Image 1 (cartoon, one colour):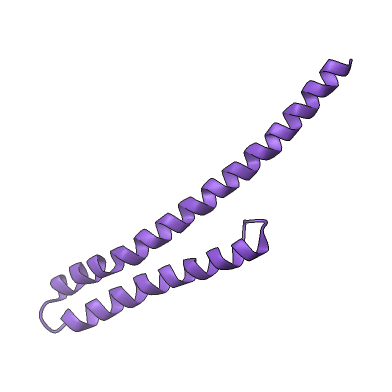
Image 2 (cartoon, helix red, strand yellow):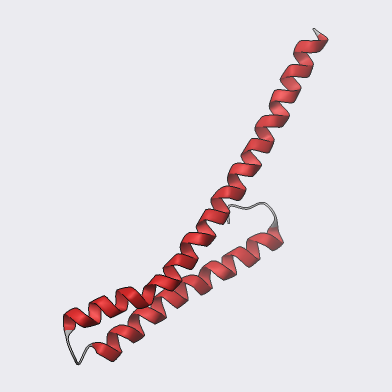
Length: 90
């Protein structure tokens, strides 16, 4: 995982797996339950059933990206403070 905090990384990985499983199971079950009626309707219902899981994946990926951005900004702030302190001492 990309996150440095191991406990948070474990929870986020678990939730990401749950979101992918929800999307997959929703799509497959909707497709198989409506396949006998119409193939086109089965594809549309599979897409609609996969949306909640995909929204979960999108939300979790956004959380990961925001956390990475925050950590990178913290690194940059430390480096800028060191540079400013070095410039001030010279």
